[in-house]
Image 1 (cartoon, rainbow, N blue to C red):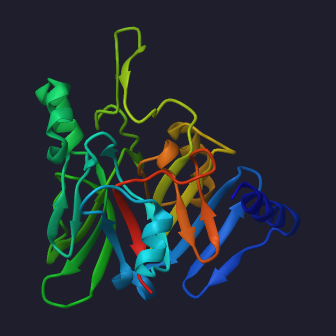
Image 2 (image 1 turned 135 degrees about the vertical axis):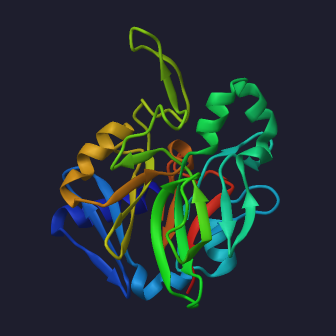
Length: 270
C-alpha cells in the first residue's frame, strides 16, 4: 500500500496530473499535499448517501468491495470499544444512528450544556423536495438547524466540527479553554496535526478532501490551506487513523499503512 501511495504522489508531482472518471474529478495538491475529489451532485446526487455497518465495524476497502460502490470514504465518529456511533446517521429518512447509541460516553460528559453541544454538531445533509422526487439539495448544517422550506431531510452523515463559514470547535463541544485560554479538554485531536477527512460544498459540487498521514494538519491549518478554493461550506468528519478512502484503483489509508475499521461512511453507488 505504501509503495502504491508513493507511486500516485510521484505521478502527481511530476505531471500535475488530474484524473477524471465520469462525474468525479480527482486531483492532488502538490504544494499542500492533499487529495481533493470534486463530485457533481447534479449528475450523481441520487447516488450519494451515507452507509452504516449495522453490527460491528468495517474498513472502507471492505465496504467498497462488498457493495461494488464507486466511491467510499470514512464517515463520522464512533466508540471503538462499543462499536457504536457517536454521530447521527439518517438514510432514506430513517435514523440509523445517533450519539445516544453510545450512551456511556454521553453520561461521561456529565454536563448538560456539553451534551447539547455534542448533539448539535455539524452534519452533511441531503434534502429532498416535498413534492418532487429526486429534487435534491446538499448542505452542511448543525443538527438543530431546520430543513429549507418545501424540503425534508433525506440523508444525514454527522461529524463535525463546522469549519467554514464559522469555525465551531467550542460551540460543538470539541474543545474548552480556561481563563488563560489553555485547553481544558479536546476531542478528536482537533488541535493536533492529524490525517483529516473533510467535506466541502461549492454551488452544485461536493468536495471530499483527504490529508493523509504524510501531511497531517490541524483543523485551523486545513481551513487556511483550503481558502483559495472559496468553498461555500466546510466541515470535518472523523480523522486520524479513521481517515480512509477507496475510489477506482486508489486506496488511501492512515493507520500504519492499513485501513482502520470504522462505523459509518459516505458512499457513491454505481
